[in-house]
Length: 190
Image 1: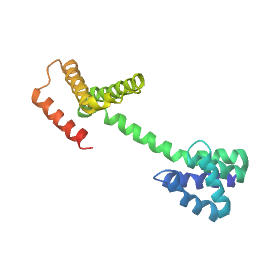
Image 2 (image 1 turned 90 degrees about the vertical axis):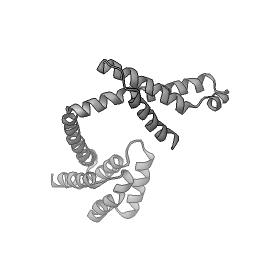
Image 3 (image 1 turned 90 degrees about the horizontal axis):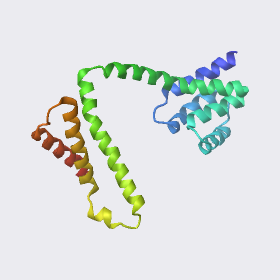
């Protein structure tokens, strides 16, 4: 029982203090697992290669392999739970804060204002993909049409009509020009 708790705690710490993905966790795994004697350095390298070669995140694969090698199937489940649980807890905390955050009237208004732009960006991407799918050999389409300008026009139209729908009044032309200028700076300076 103590071995299972220790396995869980080691991988919980690894999951809790690893930022930057699976490769960032390798030194922590090495420190925790090799120093404990669960793996030799050579085995650690082999486990990294196996974890990278199999589907799924490196952290989960490493935890599963180390847990299985030391304590069998239950050990793999416990190690995997240990490495995943910190991220799960952090995401739950962020989600609960975000839910309260979205109740703020200013945040609601900003999200509502962003909806037409997001719809526009997704729609423009779809239109571009359809054009390239239907006309694969017609490279002149991309040369003739400035898709960035098309995307901006589409998004500005959605913003205008979305604003009109939600607020039942027209968007100020000055505001529309300022948004267009900002979009132009962002889109054409990339």
